Image (tube, rainbow, N blue to C red; front, side):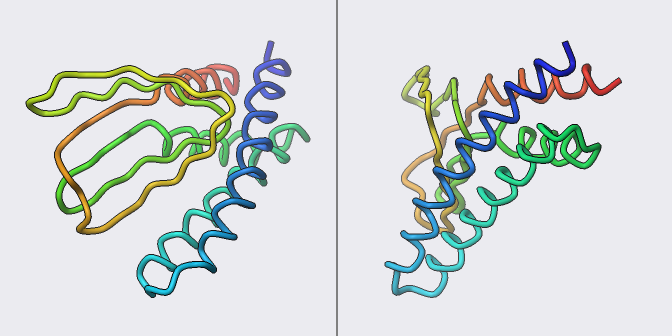
Length: 145
C-alpha cells in the first residue's frame, strides 16, 4: 500500500511539476514588472520543488516523503483578500471555495498546474480548501508510519 501511495502521488507531482515549471518559467520572462517577475519565478521554483519531490518519492528516498508532505501541505489553502491572493496546485485539484457574501462553489481539474500569488491585487474575499491535497497529505503521513 505504501508503494502504491508513493507512486500515485509521485506521478501527480512529477507531471504537475514539469507542466507548471515549463509554463510558469516561460511566463516569468514575459513580465516586465520586477515584483510580478519575482512572484512568477517563485512559482516556477515551487513547481521545480514539486518535480524533485515526486522523483525522490518514486525512488523511495526519505527526503521524498518529507518534501512531498510539504508540497501537499502548501497546496491545501486557497485564499484571496484585497491584500494577498494565494493558490497553488500540482497535478490535480478538487476545491471548495467560500466567497464572502456570494455563496460557495466547488470545482475540480485533472491535470492541473496552477500558481497564484499576488500582492495587493485582490478583488474580494474568499477562502477555500483543496481536498486532493488534504487527502494526499494525510495518505503520505499515514503511509510513512
